[in-house]
Every structure is written in structure tokens, then in C-alpha cells.
Length: 489
Image 1 (cartoon, rainbow, N blue to C red):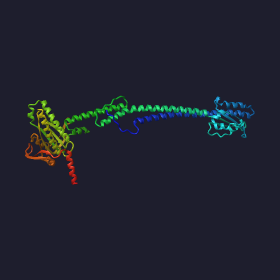
Image 2 (tube, one colour):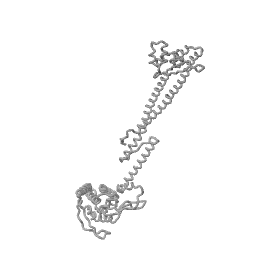
Image 3 (cartoon, helix red, strand yellow):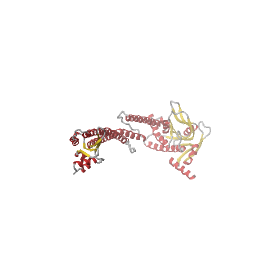
Image 4 (cartoon, rainbow, N blue to C red):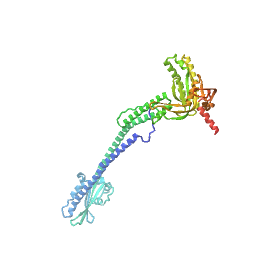
């Protein structure tokens, strides 16, 4: 099978399938990232916020108890701040202010502050503890990784006794979120690459049989029917390959039938039969045709001393030459009648210059038969000669017979006249009627013969013997006609 290099689109089927699978993997991975990481992180933030807020309320209440006259232990608050990492609170500072806004006390976790708010931590160097607490309480938190809560401390009568400001580092949560996102990105990337590779492999295996089918179809379109696809699967591709093989089998059968027809009828008739959508009817059509009859002179005597196999071989040798010339000039072999042949020009398909085609066919047959006879005589084989008669006129062309058996032929008075003219010929002679001569007179050399009375025809028929063609081919004739028409215009 030849390789068919067809012009593909920018994106082949394999590429489209690979991109689709890759996009699907990417979409699934992104969805997993959203639900498993981003949504989880959002829930963690909410949980952290609630935990920070609850813890801030508890620590602030410790200071609030001091306003109520109860015992207040600042070391407990300091412990919460300084050991915030170990306790899992991530509390980095706590400051307390009175009702008038003055800073009363507080505690700082310098380690967490240096990590979460490096600018603030840098500004606290060389400051006293009181100044550090004051600076932290007055800091404008913006880009730092610190979540602050400001809680009012109220007495039993609702009077504001002070405020507590607590800050919690969010660095650990952000690190966990970044780690989760990075891990998910790695997983997504690996899944994407694996999906892309798998889809490319799948697309290659999927598109390979399709390319093979396309290549086979291209070969079929160019006339090659020697294609058979291997069926390796039972999916849709396998069904397509099986259908292709079934189609090829039908085309081969059709070609075999056409070739078989062509052995008995002309290619034109065979093509017409095969192209008919419905059964061929028995109706005919009136067409102007040129009919040739050629017959072997003295054939009956020849058969008396030749073996039947030799007779058939002799006919086949000569008819091979005759048929090739008739087909070359687009004639239709209508029938074989023993040692005779009937050929038609102008049916079933119309052609240009049917009269000239018929005459040039006859002249070439006589020429090549003469050359073939010389070769056979050199080999000691028997030879034969043909008499050829030609007439042009109207005839009924159509299918003659019944629904079970029919034959495409032409019938009518002019067909019978062509056969009568052939019966008047001698070996090696080409006789044409006056109707044929008038159509081809300027392209041939011919001698007028005496009018001949023929069976079934009351008046004598004028005949002409063709001696030479003035043109070498139909192409030369077309060129002459085209030139003549150009000079007239």
C-alpha cells in the first residue's frame, strides 16, 4: 500500500484529542486545587480567626478582672505571649490601654514579631520595654503578616474601663497554605504531563488506523483496488475498516463485471449499463450513425482444412488488431457474426466526425492486416483478407430483447444497407456509400464505382472505393476544421 501524504489541517485529530485530554486534566487538577487547597485554606482562616478571637477575649478578660478589683497576674499574660508558638496560639503581642488611651502594660514576642513584622521589629531596637510596647500599640498594621484584635474592657455597668489589643502571627498559616499550593501545583503539573503523554499515545493509536483508511481511500480514488485493511479491533474503527473492505470487494466485483462486459460489448455500452440507476428499458432512440461491416473473404473454404482450434486462434489473432483500431477511434463493437464484425460510430454516445472515424478505421485495418499477413506468410501460417463496407444514416439505437436477456444494437434500413455494401466488397477493399462519401470527401481519396443493385433495394446504390486518407489522425482533422472556422470568422 502506498503512503498517502495528505494535506492536514493545522490541528490534526491527534493534536485535538491530546489538547482536549490535557485541558480536561488541567481542569480537574484546578478543581481539586480549589476544593482541596483554597477552600480548605479559607476554612482554616475562618477557624484561625475564631480561635484568635476567642483567645483574645480570654486574655483580655484577664486584664479586665484587674479593673474589677480581682487579682490580676500579668505573668500569665506574658506567658501566653512569650510561649505563643509552643502553645500553638502564635500570639506575638498584647497591649493594654486605660480608658483615656494611655498604655498601661503589655507583652511582646520578639521572635514572632521579627518574622511577621520585620519593619516594626527593626524599629524597636535600642528602645526601652515601655517604648517598645507603646510603639507596637500605635503601629499602623498594613502589609505585615499579623492579625490584630482590639477588645473593649467594660465594667458591670457597661462603662469602658480600657482596651486590649492583641496581635497574632499568620506566618504559619500562610506557610501551610503556600506548601499546599506548591504541592498541588507539582501534582497538577505531573498529572498534566502524564495526561498529555497518555493522550498523545492514545491519539496516535487512535489516528493511525484512520490515516491508514485515508491512505487506502486515496489509492482507491486513483484507481487502485488492491487495498485490504487489517481489522484489529471491534470498535468503530474496526467497523469502518470492515466497511471499507466490503466496499472494495464491491468495487472489485463491479470492475470485474465491467471488464467482462467489455469483452462482449464496447466500453461505452458497459459504462452505460453500470451507470444506469434503474434497469435498462427496451425503448430506443433515433440517432445518426456510421456503421461498419467487415468480413473475411474465403473464410468458409479456409475452415475446411484447418482444425477448429486453429480457426479460433486465427480469428483471435486478426480480431485483436481489428478491435484495437476500432476502440482507438471510439467505435462501438456491436456484435461478432462468425467471421464478421459490426461496429458503430455515434452510438450509444455521440462523437465528432463519425464518418471520418469509420473510414480511417477501415483504412488502418486493411493496412495493418496486410503487414500482419506478410509476417504470417514468413512463418508459414495461413492468412486472410477483409472486405469492409461503410454507410452512414439514421438508425434506431436501443436495447433489443426481453427483461431476461437483451442486447444494445442499432437497427434500420441504413444498417442493412451497410451490410449489403460489405457483401459487395473484395478482399482488401473498403467501399463506402454516397452518404458517407459526402461527409468525408475532402479528407479522403476515393474512386467512384458503378452503381450496384442490392438485395431488398429497388434502385442501384452508388459506391466509392477508398484508396487513401488525406489526414493522419482525428487530431489533424480537428486542427484543420478549427483553422477553417477561424479564417471564416
